[in-house]
Image 1 (cartoon, rainbow, N blue to C red):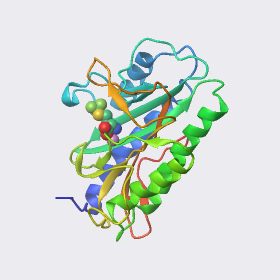
Image 2 (cartoon, protein in one colour; image 1 turned 45 degrees about the vertical axis):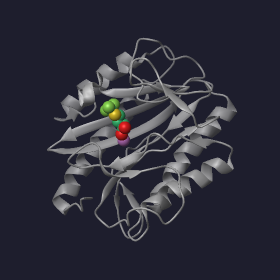
Image 3 (spheres, rainbow, N blue to C red; image 1 turned 135 degrees about the vertical axis):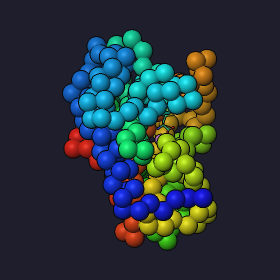
Image 4 (cartoon, rainbow, N blue to C red; image 1 turned 180 degrees about the vertical axis):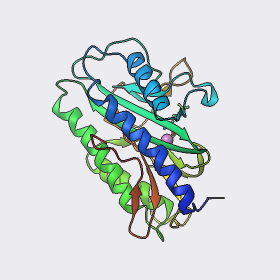
Length: 252
Ligand code: MF3
Ligand code: CO
């Protein structure tokens, strides 16, 4: 069952999503060389509490932190640690918030200092692929139209799409039906209706699509050790396309 949200519910999902975007906006100038993920995690947690909201990831299936921080070959679900960011790193920051019984989920990939042109291009293409997916998220289209558009765009540039992890419905729970793959044939799966809320989150690898999970049971990495980028927005389906609820004013 995929929920169609009432105006009242949409306001709450939008509020949680907005707080996530403002959390990442608040962190943005602090995401620099020499800072570590644990420091950012503490700042994010305090900020979310100051907004009378709760971090959504902490405690979710035992996840230990407020943010997922995934550096270079880490795809997603990196656990914040005390290794300082260094020049040339790319850092994926994913955050979820729960407020008034509804969730928001949003991620961006940041560049530290001087990132090589080819890795900048990967980050830019991943951000753009999310926009292209969101454009397809309109009433009357099918779930797989989103992934098809994302996959076509990034594979044309020589990148690859992670298969094992997907976007998701969101609202009362962080993860709801339907699953939103970032690949596939067009015209398959559920027909999208206005008022459905989903999180679209392409994970795009510079090299091959294969991944593995680190021994900590969480962190997903590329098998070939090449970098990966990730962007995510919580959106609502409308007749015109996806309307972004997790909009900040900065990078995302
Ligand atoms: N945005 C991530 C996702 O939708 C959330 C991380 S899962 C958690 O998969 F367990 F870390 F919370
Ligand atoms: Co998500």
